[in-house]
Every structure is written in structure tokens, then in C-alpha cells.
Length: 102
Image (cartoon, rainbow, N blue to C red; front, side):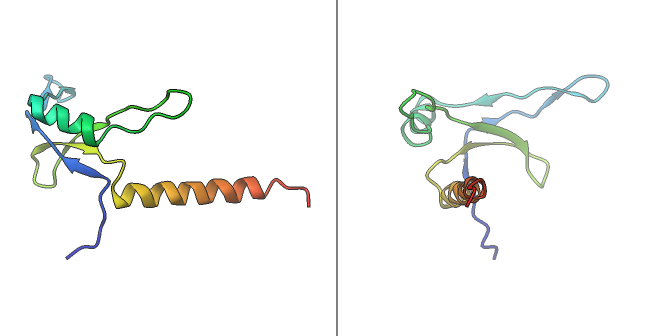
């Protein structure tokens, strides 16, 4: 079994993508029930900062390995998301420490 950590949760029903005659993707549709929307609002919305930025819910539409249309919502509180934020902060701190003249 894989130890891969994910930063999103599968959600909703996704219709098959619509393509034009040239085979180019035109659109996808995701259907969410009212309780699913409430769950997203309660659990997956990013926090707002002191400037009022944030409060986003990121929904990704993609094709699974077996060719089915899927949808997922970014889980800000997942272990994978926390690890990525910590790594990004560490990189940012390393870069800012390198600017010191001494």
C-alpha cells in the first residue's frame, strides 16, 4: 500500500466532459447537494487573514486513472497540506536569511 498523503477530498457528482468537434474540452459540470455545499463551507474554506484575504474553497475537476470524471475539494487542514505549507515557509525563511549582509 502507498503512504502517499493527499491534500484533497473527493466530492460530488461530475458529469463527463463535453468536447467540440476538434476534440477540445468545452466544459465540465459538477453537481453538489445543499448538504455537500454546507460541508464544504464548514470544513474546507481557507481561513481569512487580517487583510480579509482567504475564505476560498478550491474545487478541482480531473480525470481519474480509469478515465472517469472526478471532483475534489482542497482540504486546508490535511496532513499533506500542512506539510507543504511548512516546507514552503522553511524555503521562504532560508531565502530571507540569505539576504543578510553578515
